[in-house]
Amino acid sequence: MFCKQCNIVLCVVKSYETTLSPPILREAIADRQNRAICSAPCGANKICETFKRHKFKKDKKVNKKAYFGKFGGQFVPETVMFALNELEEAYEKIAKTSEFEAELDDLLRHYVGRPSPLYHAKRLSAHYGHEIYLKREDLNHTGAHKINNALGQALLAQKMGKKKVLAETGAGQHGVASATAAALLGLECDVYMGATDVARQQLNAFRMQLLGANVISIEEGLKTLKEATTAAIQAWVNEIESAFYIIGSAVGPHPYPKIVRDLQSVIGRETKEQLAEFGVKPDYIVACVGGGSNAIGIFSAFLDDTDVHLIGVEAAGLGADTPYHAATLTKGREGIIHGMKTIVLQDSYGMIAPVHSISAGLDYPGVGPEHSHLHDIKRAHYEGVTDDECIEALKLTSRLEGIIPAIESSHALAYLAKLCPTLSGKKTIVVNVSGRGDKDMNTVMGYEKGKIYG
Ligand SMILES: *Cc1c(COP(=O)(O)O)cnc(C)c1O
Image 1 (tube, helix red, strand yellow):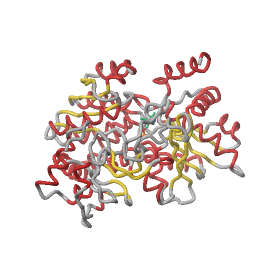
Image 2: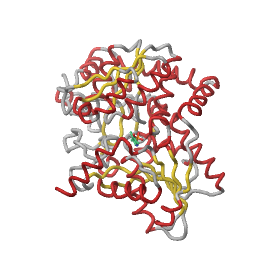
Image 3: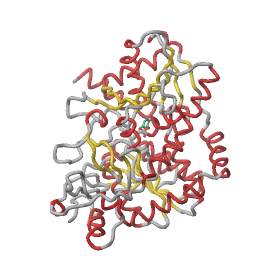
Image 4: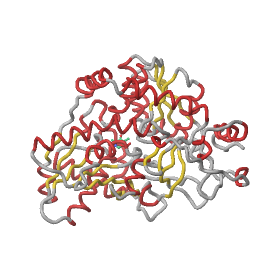
């Protein structure tokens, strides 16, 4: 049976029916009620009628490394398994060598501009009555943390002998970071972008083209990130030997969530060292969560420091109790999306729910599997912030500190207004400023107009 949105499903189904599928695949298409779920990259998560009749046994021999607790895995067609295995092997053999680390480190230092400063925000601290430190990922080349990941993956692609990289992009930030890394390393780059997003984000689409990338506009469905991701995965299946798929967040099938986490963990390592230089110990680390890469990057260094509270801030849009939000961990349920088992926003039929946020970088109906796990074991806590609260924080940070944060990062900053009044004594709070707000000025202007005339 075909998924209406994505013919890759057929591969999953066929390989189950006609071949000895790997155990992971078998688990992929059975949910807890032993119903089959469409594990299509399109994320439709539709319960497939054909498979309701079948009984699936859960195989005990699942690849433990692919999981964070019960989340993660590799819910993909067999053709993609080949590439994931190749990637996992290359990552272990190439990326973990000291030569690779030294080369990437050199690029991060001299090209990206790392280490990014940890800045003691004195006026925000006075405003909130606690010590606020900002990790300045907004000062990176291309304006956000995304370059840490794109550059690392592109360098691995080059070392693997790939000639081309593929990337999906929503608002265009990951597309620009990938196009930048590809230009630097002399790789071809195809960026898949929904037609709606190409129109909305003309500047970023043009930027990618200037950097030498092909921007491929996708006309399917809602013509946004979900469709672009499906198209990128399909393109990858077609060019699986020559192309490397650069995923943009700590999501997708194993080993991507771990690779992205490792590449972003530089944020946490630096923060820890920089706090030590200031001679302070953190009480709270706060970061916004879309797919969760900047958050897991800064959290990773503090996971074992159990006295440090880790807080992920999701987009509550118009309110987590309305249908217009992207508060996945607050409102979602276990499901399968883009090759992973994680918490997913879905309706009662298991269909992926539409999401809303003022921030294009946070409106994703899933979340990286490691966050689902940290949420499950209560090591990290996840809170929602609305569009209105986010814009308030963007303005406050601009006026008090002369820093215009990205609207994504403004979600993390907005959480300070909720957290600080509840704390006694003077606490030390680090906020990861994942990116700068230059890209968001049109959105903020539109928001203001809506306020005045709406
Ligand atoms: C893309 C983006 C995000 C969201 O992605 P994560 O993977 O959750 O970090 C956050 N901030 C900025 C500035 C972004 O561009």
